[in-house]
Length: 532
Image 1 (cartoon, rainbow, N blue to C red):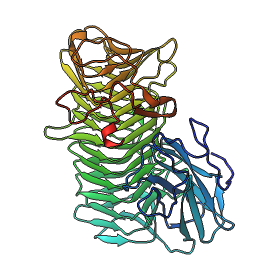
Image 2 (image 1 turned 60 degrees about the vertical axis):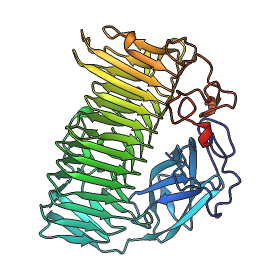
Image 3 (image 1 turned 90 degrees about the horizontal axis):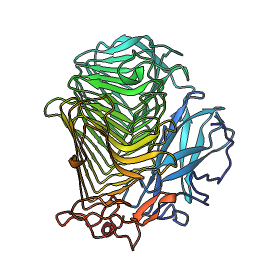
Image 4 (image 1 turned 180 degrees about the horizontal axis):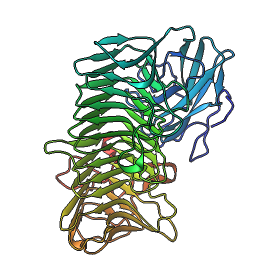
């Protein structure tokens, strides 16, 4: 985006405001220096090379030290000191549920201060010019374990870390990798040994392109030792061999390897975020995926994705937030306390897998929030809103399930608020049993409890699937008299859904009407007794 830097300007998407779109509270009068109050956290390098893009990751953190997901849409304003030039002229970072990022290029040279402000909150960091820092050129095969610190240039021909060898990256290490303007021949880092990338918030490790816009290949872990990417940025990759859906190359490819990502950012790639298979094990903690063709596509892989963000996956087809194929026996696939927003296909797509989704916000997906194909998917205490945005689809479903011929797919939903956009002339569906591929026999079973279902058509079942396999109890099926114990058909009285506030008004019929065996009193995602 090409914008001039203007001190103090806040632009809010969705509402007209002097500050932020905050459904629960306002930050306008909070002293930023006060202890135990909201603050801005930055994950950004404390050094830079003029002309090499820097990732600025901004997080609005609440008094408990957790990213505030109730900061629905906002912009963080950027400003720089001295004669520093920002190209392209980026003066803001768009936040989605409290977190956002942007690639920013600084030119002009010299050390400078970068200030980020959101409402009354602000934080300033110093970036040091590394123009005079020596550049170590590497390629081929590492002969022994070693530690990198400073600037490294991985040249064409790939870099191999063989079995038994560990490459350790110190905080602030900048790895520049040769790339390609198109095709699949970007330079790779092939790992049979291990990478220990040990950045910190004030000085993350960065893997990025040597020439901006000329994307490198992939980090390829095959039968490798366990690796860790902590406070690590993996950017401008994906010129690697195409694989799977989206027909694009991944930034990270893993098979039979254990990878842990902690406070990492994988962004701005020419292909998908990741392809993992064949017994891989993936752990993501507070990790960001953004601005790529699609999120990870995994099969035969265990997944733990906690406190993460998946944003801005853009492509003509298969631009899913994450695509989870069937896992191996004993492997678990779970997403918790995360946000998936702004993707051009499904937020979460499954294929024969058993998946648990808990305390997640899935919003602003052009297709479904969750697409289920076989297996068993459990959606527990989630907020699924503002999806089904593709204008060419006449039937829009927030959750759609399909079964393989002669088999059963199961979807369990509890304490979830599911609001499907009501579009004139369209069939807007909350939950759907979808016969997309013309199967003749099969079963799709929904077990829905303690939830709010608000859509033009709450339930839509296509033959050969049966309405009798849709089990709904202790739910508010808005505007529909659905059979089942404890069901309502009332307006849930959200506080202000037009401005993204799906909490329950004090007069809501959904307060205190959950099933007797529930450990939460209210229907839906937000619980008044817990102050949220």
